[in-house]
Structures are given as C-alpha cells and as structure tokens.
Length: 253
Image 1 (tube, one colour):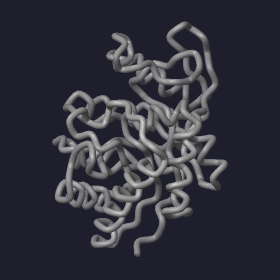
Image 2 (spheres, rainbow, N blue to C red):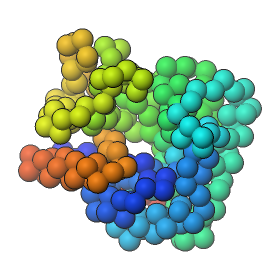
Image 3 (cartoon, rainbow, N blue to C red):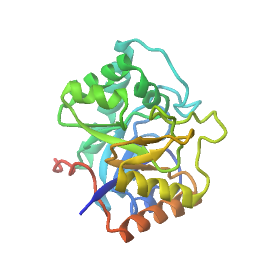
C-alpha cells in the first residue's frame, strides 16, 4: 500500500492546531524564534501526543517581526548557534512531557535559502547531525538541503507542497510573485495526487518535472486551510493511499 506523510507547521499561535492533529501525521513544532513560545509549544505537543502524530522541530531565523520569512546572511557559527538554541529548547520541553522529536524542518527563509545555497544547507545538515544523528532532516524535494542531509549521514524526508507553484528547476515560486499560491482547492488536490501517484508536478512554464515525495506540507493558518487539509486527506484515502510518517517516531523516553 502506498503511504504518504502529511505535515503542517504548528505551535505558531494559530487557533486550529488541535483540529489539524486529526488530519496530519507529522507536526512541525515552532521552535520559538519566529512565533509561538514555551506555553504554546507545550500545548501543541500535547495535541500531537494525544493523536499519535510524529513530532518535528521547526527552527528559523531570529525574526518574529517578519515571521521568519526575511532572508539573512549569517556566518556558519551563527547558524549553528541558532539551531542548537532552538533544538535544545524544543527537546527540553519534549523531555518534560515524555516525548521525543523525530526530525527537523527549517522554517521560512532559512528553509528556502538552504534549498538553493549549498553552503548554508551543509551548515544546517551538519548542525542537525552534531546535535542528534538519529534525527531526520526534512527539506524541499531535490534541494541542496536534501543533498546535504544525505552527505552528512542523516535520514532525509523529501517534501512537496500542496498549495505552492513550482519553478522549472523544482524550487518554489516566491511568495512575492502573484501566482505563487494555488487558490483553487481542486487544482491543489490534483497536484498532490499527481505528485504522490506519479512523482510529477507541472511547473509554471508547463514543464513536467519529476519529484520524489515523502511528505506533503499543508498550511494550517485559517479555517479554509483546515477544510482544505481535510479534503486532501480524504481524497488520498479514497484513492487507497495511506497516511503515515516517513519514519516511525522514536520511542518516548
């Protein structure tokens, strides 16, 4: 049976986190520097625990003003410090609740820059490995981050997006471009089904590109997003595609 992971960014202060846990199989827990905080993190971890959802850590640049979506040019040492700071805090909260994270997915600009910048990608991958080599690294399918994760000896999770359009090189169309987001539910659902079943996505120029997909990112900030996520899950299940994490969560400590 074909299976696919459904993930969403959570613990960012939006109101639908608990409801999302009934839909997704993996939760990207905000690590506190672009949104959220300790109490929000703990509450969201409890939602994930109660629904058997795999836990991922979602570190970002230190940028609450811009929700972590502004590019930065930091030294490798500064990037490592940011990652260890956020991963350490998230693991500590998890340990307090008897939980263990399974993977790391960078957020926003950190994610996007690492998708195309091999130096930043290598820094992130090595930092994750040095922090805990048993963690998996989630990144954009075919990106420099996935390549760096493999080179560092990490398990990797190749991610694709339900409601984002793609460039011909496999990168995401920038949010600054008017057509970056797919607004029509049916178009997005068809994109997901094609990616999962055929390993293909149609770029904005019409080129069909191949993608390896282990996990689909669903956005959870808004009531419509919640309904949309449920539609995607239901469609996949109707087509005989199971929903499960790429890697089983590590046992609770």
